[in-house]
Amino acid sequence: MIPAGVPHEYWADDDDPWTIWWMHARGPDATEIERDLARHAGPDDVAVVEVHDQVRVVADLERVVDALETDETYPSLLRCAGAAWSVLAQVAADAAAGSPVRGEPVRAAQEYLRTHLDSVVEVAALARRFGLSTSHFSARFRAATGGGVVEYVKRLRMARACELLITTELPVADIARSVGYPDPFYFSRQFRSVHACSPTDFRRGIHDR
Image 1 (tube, rainbow, N blue to C red):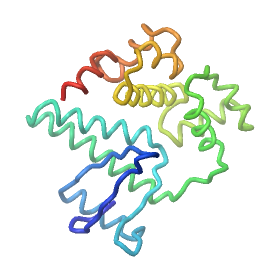
Image 2: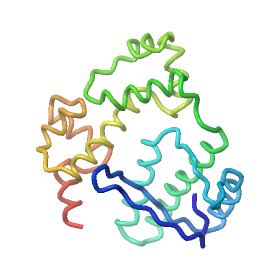
Image 3: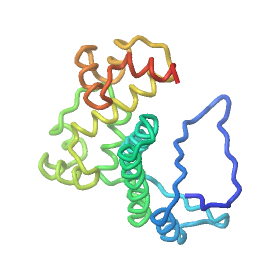
């Protein structure tokens, strides 16, 4: 969280690049959250917060972009502001909660799911892997992420699919398999349920911008 008026610069390594999402927020709510995060700031007045659920934050940032790209009517701006507020609220909440414990089962499960997108997900097997009963694991996972394991995996897979659609020329069927959907038609239905368009239309829209 970089306050207004603070000079800054950043860049990605040519050989090992990374992706950045950024949002410029103005208004009394943004100012209040900036003030609240000030106690987490370092010597350069920049507050660095470890986001607990990156997938959810990125999904809200995508909603901000989608709303702004639709038009600048009042309803679209309201949707944009709502999604932006959700991003700020999540960052503030994560700052207040502090860094999650690395050995905590839900955190470990999230990391496992991120690196096994093409694997079949069985909640009971996942719970056993991290030493919990299915009901206890499911409750803790829902409390930490705001949703169930299946929905979380779906969001992970769709986020990765979007990245591949944007950055590669891989066929949709190959992308589907790489994120755990052997059936490309089922993948397309799942993608449409999240992004309101087919993977092909999504890729076409990115290239047409």
